View 1 (cartoon, rainbow, N blue to C red):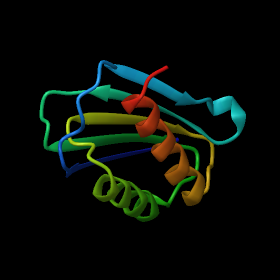
View 2 (cartoon, helix red, strand yellow):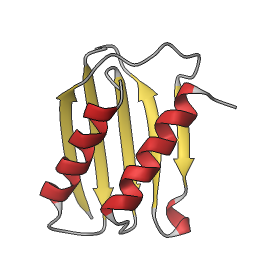
View 3 (cartoon, one colour):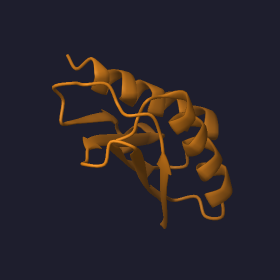
View 4 (cartoon, helix red, strand yellow):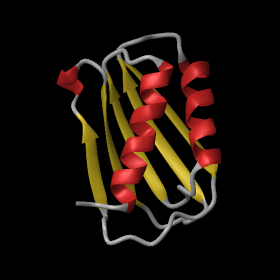
Length: 104
């Protein structure tokens, strides 16, 4: 397993009642994401555990793009990956953020 961490500045997240949300399942063959709130509302943190070694630059590009497209400052994303493609990672991040904003 390779562990990748990234912190970047982003617009503050919208107010929500959810303190955490889990999206996806590693056993599904792609990835799962846990979204949690943290104190610094201008900083976004990503912690990635992936089975695919040598793709840190690709991960960082996908994660930075996501943080630029969404107001995710103040959130931490814990990502457990089972070899998902960058497109799947981006889609799952979007899904996790939307689920966090509008929990069922």
